[in-house]
Figure 1 (cartoon, rainbow, N blue to C red):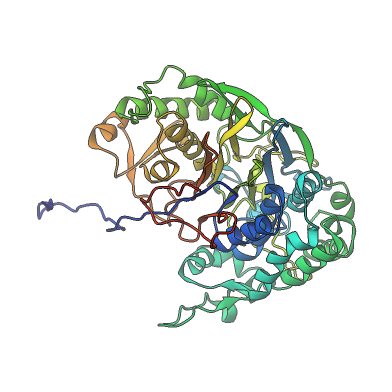
Figure 2 (figure 1 turned 180 degrees about the horizontal axis):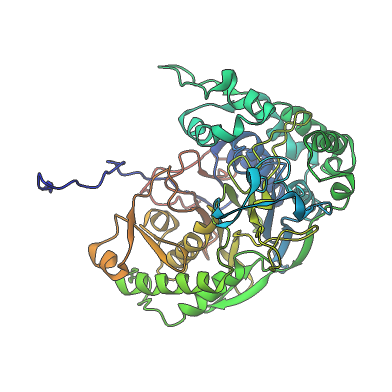
Length: 542
C-alpha cells in the first residue's frame, strides 16, 4: 500500500523511483574493476595478451585519463597496494608533493574566514583551488612507471596502446559526462584550453534529441599518450613531454619547473599491517586515511557483529560504526580534506597477483586548467594544504599534504582474499570500511554488499544515512541526515572490490550508483569472451 502524505504537509522529494542493480563479474582468471567500463576493458585486453595484473592496472589507469578525465589522469597523484604471489604486500607511493618553488606569500588570505571545500581560510581568487597556483607535482606517471617496471610483463607500448586508442576516439559526451562538465563549467570557462574543449561556443554542449551523443576532443592528450607509449613514461619528467609541460607551466605562471619534474619518482615500502578479526589488513600508511581507518577498527573491536554468515548489520552495529567513524574524524586534523574526484581500480590476474590503486586529480577536473601543448589537466593538490600558517599541514614548498586515499587489501596467511578502495574524498573512509566488513565479517557476497544501504560520516558532527535503511537503524543513528544514494549529488563514495574465494573463484563488483563503472572478468581458457554476468545469477564454476 502506498503511503500518501497529508495535504497540509510537504513530503521530501524523491529522485529515484527505481531499483538499480550493478552486475558483478566472476571467474577463475583475471578480474578488472574500474569506474569506467571502457578502462576496465583496456585492462582485460592486457590480461588476455598475457600481461600481469600490474600491466592491466597501468593500462586501466592510463585509459581513465582519456575516458574519465575529471577524476584522474597524467596530471594526478596516487597510491597503490600490490601483492604478488609469494611476496609481501608492497605500497607504491606516488602521493602529492608541492613544488620546491611554492611560495606561501602567493596565497594571500581575504580575511573572510572559512571557504571552499575544506573550510581553510579563504585565499584571494581561490588561487589554491584552481588555476596555475593550485597544482602539486604530477606524480601519477611515475607511479605507473614504477608498477610496470617492478611487476609488468609486456612492453610498455602495448600497455599504453588502449589509452592511445581511446584518446583518439575522444570523450563520449553523454548525459553523465555533461553533468560533470556542467558542474565545473563556471571555472572551466576561465581557462582558454579547457573552455575550448569542454565549452564550445562558451556553453556546455546540448544532448541531441536522439542519436549519438557526440564526443569532446581532448586537446593534445592523444599525441602525449602516443609519445609516452613510444618513449616510456619517464619522458613525462625528462624528455619531450617534460619540455612541453615546463613551457606550459611557465606560460601559465605555475611554480612547477623542470627540476620538480626531474626529481619526481615513486617510492616502494612494505604495507602497514593491522590485525583484523583473525586476518591481516594491509594499508598504505603515510599521510592517507590509514590512521583514521585504524581508529575505526579499534573502535569496532567489540562491536556487535553476530555470527557470520547468518548475521547482518543491525541498528546496534550501525550505531557503533557511526560512533567509531565520528571519533576517527575528531582525531584527524580538523577540518580535513573532504572533496574529491578520485578514481579507484582493482585488478587480479590468473596467477594471483592483486593490485589496488587509487589515483586522483583532487577536485573534478583538478586545476580545471588544461595545458595547451600536452592536453594534460594538472591536479589541484595545493587545495589539500591548510592556508593558515604555522600548522603541520600548512602551505610550504616540497611538502606532502594529508589526503583521504584508502586502498586496502585483506590477507589470510599472506593470501589476498579481498582488495579494493573507493573515490569520494572524505566519503571514502566510511564506504571502504563498510564494504570491507559487509563482505569479510558478515559473509555477504560482493554483489550484495555493494547494494546494501550504508551510512556516511564525514566529520565528528555529521552522520548521513541512506534513506533505504530500516526505520530502527535510522532511529538508532538519530540525529541523522537522510539522503538518497544517487549518481549525483554524490552523498556517498564510489567503492569497488574483488573477493578471492578459497576455491580460486574471484568476484569483482563496482559502485552500484556509478553509471559508467564496471567489473569485467577474463573468460575461461578456450571459452567465449565474457564481461559482467546478470545481476542475481550465481557465479559460474569453471
